[in-house]
Length: 108
Image 1 (tube, rainbow, N blue to C red):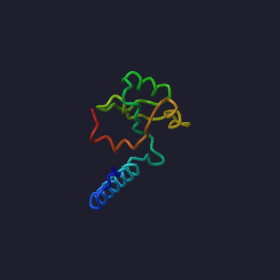
Image 2 (cartoon, rainbow, N blue to C red; image 1 turned 60 degrees about the vertical axis):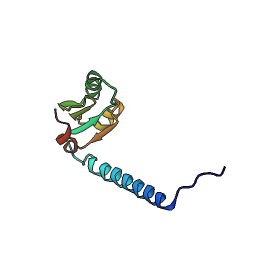
Image 3 (cartoon, rainbow, N blue to C red; image 1 turned 135 degrees about the vertical axis):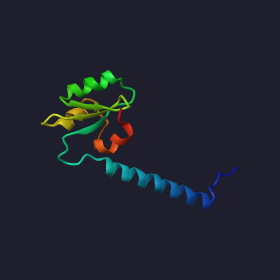
Image 4 (cartoon, helix red, strand yellow; image 1 turned 90 degrees about the horizontal axis):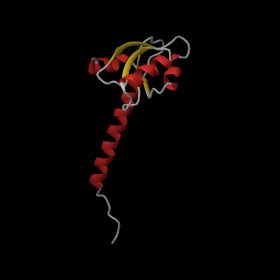
């Protein structure tokens, strides 16, 4: 039996879908970036962490809690003055993003 081939019309659709996904990810990444000089940021920790773990990680990074969201792994914080973002990453933060980007959807 020979290997199955994908018809050219299906390949065109797959390419279009791949391009759509790539452009969505690119636009999302650019719009969620923390702008320079921001004093308050949204921080995403691993989703399996409890609220207590995220609070402890925030405290260990010397960041002040501003507000919580409907997701326990996503907090809005004020990082410390010196290397605050780096300390948040060391404490386990996966993403540090602009808080305005998530505030409309995830405010508790």
